[in-house]
Length: 391
Image (cartoon, rainbow, N blue to C red; front, side, top):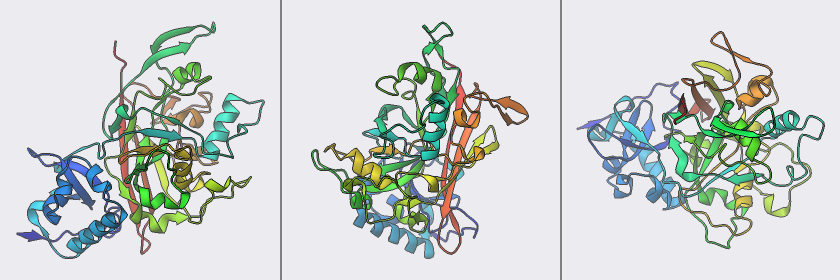
């Protein structure tokens, strides 16, 4: 038996999108699927290809761009025709998991508006951007083992916090925050000692996904000098269940804003990898911010080139993220420390004055980008609810 999938014209998940995820129907094992509308296509069954029977995208991603495009073309042909009925599952009836087995995780700091806002908050009497910021994509290595799929509850972290006396105590974070980000998933790795050229970005990166890199601002403030984020960032990073392939974002590609001074030669590319992606941050059901990725200073191609410039190797499944995405307007800020200006200007959420996250709060980040024929495509969502600290 075969069926035809009907997708509403206004769906963010039409045939121009086709994000990949890992799902399991009731009582069955996890396998790779593609989302179309509110349905999931079982690709192992529909394409009769065992690479999609794996419980992660890694095996498929490792096959490289040519195979990625061939699979995308075959899926679109099936959608235009008919698909075996047993290969189609309602999205509401399946479970999802982390779509990739992540080897390494790197977080960048690529938004000039976010970096400027934090510089003004933390160094009000100095230049907001440090001298190196316009010369390289600043980043740090995160903890791959605490990257979790969207929908996973987040336990409030504990750590050392500076007290009014200047000495630390230990306890739950009181300034728990979000960071609305875009993540990039490496499909084809690189050898140790061999940098990735900036114009080889699309030969290595499989796709993009929404990220919420939760942040304990009080823990981070005490520990981050001189070596940077540690326990204030490593407790949890949420990743969308769906990876949007780069091919779906062709229409969204735009030039970067002017970079001054001109980057060093290894960070200059001939291809446009700015992306016109609009995010939205929802706090307990209320939309509080619309961060624009189009404002990012450093591109994902520059981030990857810099990440490997010293010869560092990459592997299939590696994840790197943009850092907080913010725009110049108050309602375009991608973190609550910015929205509340360090806690001094509370945000009204459902009639309550709020600054940082409380137990029971839920944050959902969504995004969309231009598709073909004036349609938009969706990047799914990344969702998390805060649970009280343990111990």
